[in-house]
Amino acid sequence: MPRPPWPFRSTVWRSPLRGPWLTSVFGAVLLVGIPLMILTGLLSYAAYNPRLSANDLTPGRGLLGFYLFDWPTRPVWLYRLNQGLHVTVGIALVPILLAKLWSVIPKLFEWPPVRSLAMALERITIALLVGGVLFEFVTGILNSQVFYPWKFSFYEAHLYGAWVFIGAFVTHLALKLPTMVRSLRRRSLRAELRKGIADTEPEPPDEHGLVPERPDRPTISRRGALGLVAASSLGLLGLTAGQSIGGRLRSLALFSPRGGSYGSAPNDFPVNKTAASVGIKAEETGPNWRLALKGPLGERSISRDELMAMPQHTYDLPIACVEGWSVVATWTGVRIADLARMVGASEADAVLVESLEKGGAFARASLSGRQIRDQQSLLALEVNGAELSMDHGFPARVIVPAAPGVHNTKWVRQMTFMESA
Ligand SMILES: Nc1nc2c(c(=O)[nH]1)N[C@H]1C(S)=C(S)[C@@H](COP(=O)(O)O)O[C@H]1N2
Ligand SMILES: [Mo]
Figure 1 (cartoon, rainbow, N blue to C red):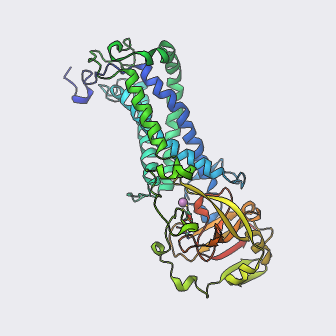
Figure 2: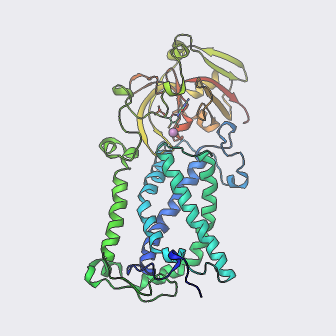
């Protein structure tokens, strides 16, 4: 038989650390982490209430929306927790994922690539698994960094990619779980963590081809390798979590693109899209601004002074962005339910909220009947005891408990209440 090309030679991959036990240790961590990613990811999608037309960014989702439900408004920190976990844990899983891939490199370069039908099926699963996980992590992380170098819609691609990955993940789990449990039983983690480099022996030869035929001498102990991966993961966690937890930790969130300053004190918290960047002009938000309300009783046009004269309510509510950052602020304004009543829409199932912003994916959003009727759902006029700043949505912006940040439309121009969406 001719010699296989370079990466496919079994003599290329010679780390004495590789073996089913090490792979299974990383696998066990991912077995906790990946299902958490899947769960919070699917919940995040449901939180968008994509059954309301203005929110549907995946027109072709078909059966993938089978589990969608009416996203609740309590507890108010629900989306904040969900998305904080999704993004923070996702970033912290990167070193573990890379270590796991490193540990199985010889399997990815088997030669000949396909020997039987069973092997062909296994390799297709692996291709979807590895391709899927890399696609999901790369698109997710770039999105959390507010960086969109591609032409496709993140929202659609991340959802479709997730389902491809979920299918491959479940298959992989069913095939490998017994091996994982067996391999973990063979060696004690505690004993391994006591061994230095001098005692680091290769694992016994295995039928999976992870242990090299001719192992090199170790350049790091297994303990050292596990420690390096764990420290990288915890380091990333520490440098990310502050963007969702807030307080003093926020200044540690070096991986958050939403650091820095956003105006003077009460309004100094992260901004998604400044007024200037979306072309909001001062004359549109000045004394001539009117809020248009539409409902079964017809149309009303309301000035800001008239809104200020209505009963005002104040609640502490988070803005929680899909990118993972969140911040709790004290919002004051009129209840959306009170606005609904003014146009005879107390029973509305949905409201379409439109911004002064022209075009742009976030210029409009729908809220559900439950969100309209929640007494903490506000059209806010003030934040933290001060007038809303231009960047936070002056003259008026939506704030709804437990909703994704993107549904808290800023610079509101018009609200259309509908009996049936
Ligand atoms: N009109 C309009 N409203 C908007 C946005 C926008 O770009 N345009 N961004 C949304 C997103 S994605 C988030 S996370 C919140 C952020 O609110 P903030 O900028 O006041 O912190 O506003 C939401 N409302
Ligand atoms: Mo957002």
